[in-house]
Length: 169
Image 1 (cartoon, helix red, strand yellow):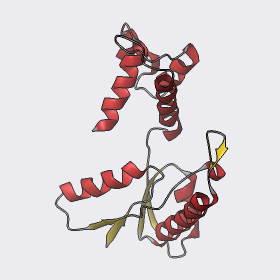
Image 2 (image 1 turned 180 degrees about the vertical axis):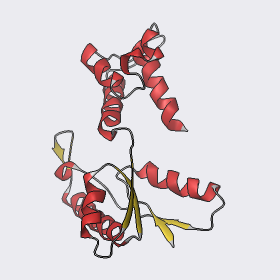
Image 3 (image 1 turned 90 degrees about the horizontal axis):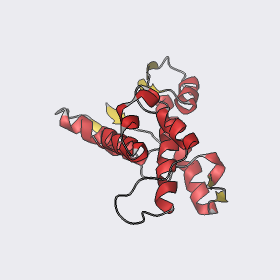
């Protein structure tokens, strides 16, 4: 058998491949490198080019078919693996793993990206994140706004650094 990895986060594919290799397993890990996307080809309010959207459509069909044909489907909560599982006709085994809500982590990444766009200025950089943004940030941290990064003199920087380090491993 082989491990097929489908994810809209390209880094996840490489992470799983490297993880399986580190176990010493001879099992092959496969995935495609086609373009991925959500939101009907829109990003930041702008439509993506037609060739990008066509490749996204192809990659979506490939993922759906391969996941639905798998003997065992392991997934975190998402509508996409649910659709693949419903397409299966042969009693596919399935393991659903609870994971951190992905949308909150994506929001945290967008907060930092906007802060970076506003510039670093001089001296020690502190991300310029308003109270509403800090609430969103608390939503993805263990213990929410009770997390120790909120006690720091620059909580926006401390919390963003925590997230970066937590996801670098």
